[in-house]
Image (cartoon, rainbow, N blue to C red; front, side, top):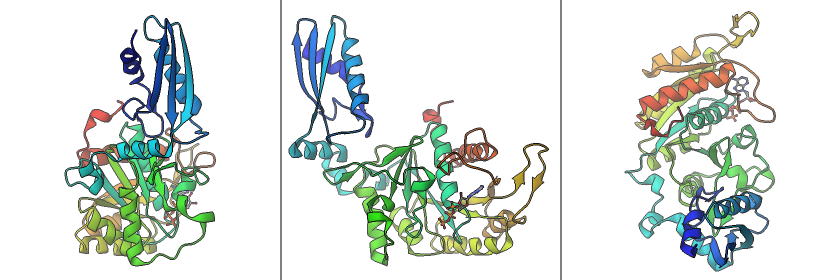
Length: 357
Ligand SMILES: Nc1ncnc2c1ncn2[C@@H]1O[C@H](COP(=O)(O)OP(=O)(O)OP(=O)(O)O)[C@@H](O)[C@H]1O
């Protein structure tokens, strides 16, 4: 039994927050071997890290699996400022990558989907969050940026409004929930105070969300845009020319009219529209299966036709999970989002290797 063998065994243990090996991240500080007894020290980024016991258990398990080891003592320490800086530098990657986030690299294989609507309250954020969860259920690596700076509704939809992301030496780790990585400006605004955003600040904020956040590898990133036809869509387009836009509307003709305007704006800046989602399309009785069109009919088709694109999904009205806005996988809505994610993955030619199926 050697130090190398123990280190090799510890490679499988990942930091639960950044999902990379603790060995690769140089979090293993000390390994001492005394006969068949092994004593290791692992450093965490912050004191009182809530995931401390998870790492501790996994480290112990990995050591005990090495042939010849009869006992394992695991000490959890905290990084010094210097060690934290080194850790952050490792997460940022090579010097070339730090200049520009890997996600913004033109060779990045990450697909970007910006979700837009003409007006507020049509369920754009609900659609963004549930589509993200559906991609994750399919096994894709998913990130979500809450760029809806007037609303910030994603954190409460995901049930993480009170969670603060971990920041390591100015590098932000996205909050992980439902297997999705989420970053929202809400996390950084004291007491959710309203913020007056000016044009250049918006672009800067978006850029920071790429530069200062450790996303890791992603298959798809969704951006929840503010409603309307504002600057943020333009900024997103400038920064991510490859991104595609999804337009959300309700079936009501008035909502459809404004959704068309958002779509036309996207087309003017040569933003590809990938399709239209009609949300709150109908209510379906779970006893008799009959559909009631509470908000009218035809909005989705109308928007798709005017913009020369397709109606990709009709999401029924329904109740979400407890304390979140995420529909369960077996609900009508959950199934509709799952089908939508499969369709989008195919249209965007996302590699199927990450799928669980
Ligand atoms: N399919 C649905 N069935 C039932 N309720 C829904 C559905 N979609 C959205 N809702 C509800 O409608 C309300 C508005 O949704 P959401 O916040 O997602 O809209 P939005 O278009 O993002 O609005 P804003 O831009 O103002 O935040 C929320 O209360 C949400 O729970």
